[in-house]
Image (cartoon, rainbow, N blue to C red):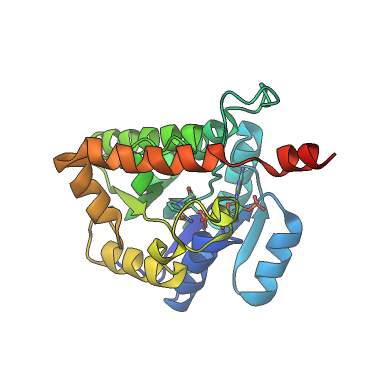
Length: 267
Ligand SMILES: NC(=O)c1ccc[n+]([C@@H]2O[C@H](COP(=O)([O-])OP(=O)(O)OC[C@H]3O[C@@H](n4cnc5c(N)ncnc54)[C@H](OP(=O)(O)O)[C@@H]3O)[C@@H](O)[C@H]2O)c1
């Protein structure tokens, strides 16, 4: 895949992997459009990357996706690459009585329904371009359930399955379907998981995205930076071992009192 002179729409470009994607794709001579919910974060990103185009848009809101499509395709009719990167990951204790019933499945709306809706909205436009691509950012967690973030894990396995199915359906079109299976990385997404996962296992975002871009240039359809490849391999040869390791992390973390429980204990 040629990775210069494209017009690229990247969801969640104000932080972590999305920010790095935007920075490196701009350096390669692409027109880069990013989204995010927080206008302040978009403004800060624009200051750091003056050539980036910012759009406030929530990928979990179907109306916002329609609006985004109308705005960006009018301003950037050559848009030919969509990167579904925006995502959220929460530590959830499913037996916590104060769990928010309405929001328990919030990650499904952002991480799974969001990319599916984005693809459905932008696909006719992408198919009308000479060469186009859709990149979905999944996770090493797609290979094994992660009991500490149960909804997140379900969304990433689901997104991986959807991406593979989409690739088959688009086989005879001009739209390539790429999956970036990201391993753990040092981004704000993991702030809530400090102490749960060894940070030495986490990849630097700039290195991870450099591997992703190199993979895309080599026309790889499944890109597995860092330990993502090891996770895939282990999920095949030793799935129970891998699941037990993930379960131990969850059990240890959930056994620790939450900040609120600690506060109540002091009172
Ligand atoms: N970091 C890791 O260890 C890791 C590992 C595997 C996979 N991934 C995946 O990589 C992707 C990027 O993660 P990250 O680590 O870079 O996270 P991050 O640093 O927390 O950044 C997330 C980005 O997504 C945006 N975002 C969140 N919800 C959104 C929504 N509803 N609509 C639009 N934008 C939204 C955020 O901006 P706003 O908050 O302003 O909306 C932000 O720009 C995610 O899909 C994540 O699941 C990350």
